[in-house]
Length: 185
Figure 1 (cartoon, rainbow, N blue to C red):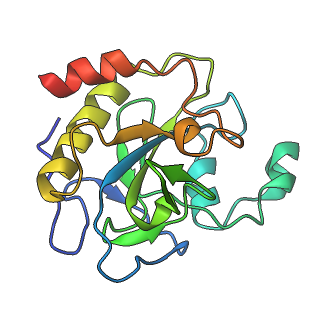
Figure 2 (figure 1 turned 90 degrees about the vertical axis):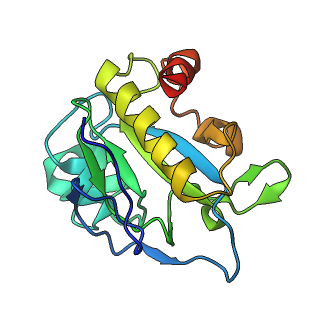
């Protein structure tokens, strides 16, 4: 994997960029201090097809799958998606607020979108994530911690932990110890 570098505008160099319109400014003087790991597949349990990319860019065609009719009008995004292959796609600059966490709370502070970076993994709660995804997530987390001093080593959590009544991702199939071991190397 190529060494990850973030430029002054908050964009990773040498990764695919598909800019999402679903972002806004972080509140003034807000420090980035959290990485939120998500899991997504569209349609559920299926990989590839470009549907996640279309979803984050408000171009999801509801006629392609029955499941899409219930979500195609939603305005959501994440900063990055890590596909099953380990390919990273960035949708929103890290300096901006992506719309990934919704109503959420971390260590007593609400509105996690304000101070977090959202990383989607292509996957489901109940299917193992791929080794390339763990390697890329560990590398990305390390790069983010190096670039944004407010992110402590233990400031990486799942969507399920910041919105437990609403969300289950990345789910029990996500191996936190495997991620931790990749981050130590």
